[in-house]
Length: 435
Ligand code: ATP
Ligand code: MN
Image 1 (tube, rainbow, N blue to C red):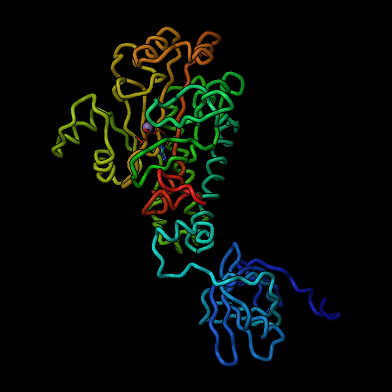
Image 2: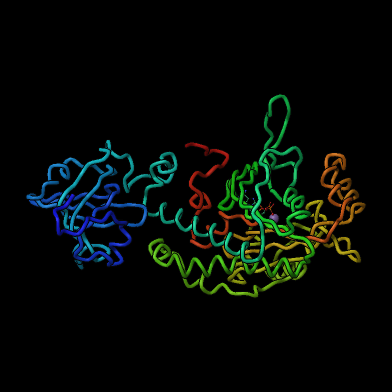
């Protein structure tokens, strides 16, 4: 407690100090020691909290001196002092300390500048405290908010589909099986089929939930567990779908460019690239994409699937997010609706971005029960396994569309991350599942 007449000391966030809101005021901050430098009569502590880092100077005659002397990197502390503008301090403001309290003294912190990527991934639980990781995770949180904002604005209800499932959605090769008491189940690869159930009561629905893929190859765009932004709605067609998806990505990019300026700058991300994302996105058919690739010497034939290298070639050419649509039916999932007059073409569209390639797949879903059964059989599957799914076509079937967008792929592109592993706090790959 301070003496009568003194302003009551305010517990503040470091961001507020850096914004100049507490100049010459008496404040107190709580956080962790980020850096420490000791002189003869002064100790410089750089303190971090969830909002930023601020330099604090502790002088020898200050009552907190002996505590400051003891403090080690990553110790938690509470520090009280007066905010002074100082051009030499990073952020232009520093705290001249009057008292320092140790909350939790840290042992010698194992992370330092010279450590390898592999070491940092083994120590992920500690590396997440780094400036870079905290900034990425902060933007990630905001991007999830912006996605939800957009869905809400468009009248969508957020729903919670299951992760344990009994039948595959995207094909067997990347399906994780698991023992479920005395049965065999799978981890979901997509929530789509469950969202399709829910459109019959809630109409426009979405979820942001994990999807699991047993991807055996290591690439810069695959994880075994990722967060899937999925939407599904009735009474809609391909142009509604494309308009929605480009609107969603544009909203996310615009909001991030506007509200996360500081984070983007500190991360060295390209704010102008995000601010430049506007609708409509360029779009080309699969057939046009094949022609473009052929002009570049590609040997692919109509009907072949585009690989990462092909997607990258096209996307780097376009230089911004765009759509490819009208894919061959043969390379698409059983639920894709086909053109009645051209059954070899599916109403399916991918969104692509430079360097990463595909970030979303969407399309119209087959709403005709007989065609759906035929497609399931053609894919070598048993219609009985999809009985509940077929019920959706038996009772009030409706034309509908939906899409799935990989949150981590979006972030990897937005923030120019080298590897998708840095876009999620605890990346899972074939070899990495600790901590
Ligand atoms: P790819 O061909 O690139 O492996 P996909 O076509 O199999 O992807 P979809 O089934 O279309 O993937 O899934 C929808 C979206 O989910 C993809 O566009 C992508 O953004 C994301 N996604 C798919 N698999 C992964 C993964 N293993 N790791 C991270 N994101 C993924
Ligand atoms: Mn896809």
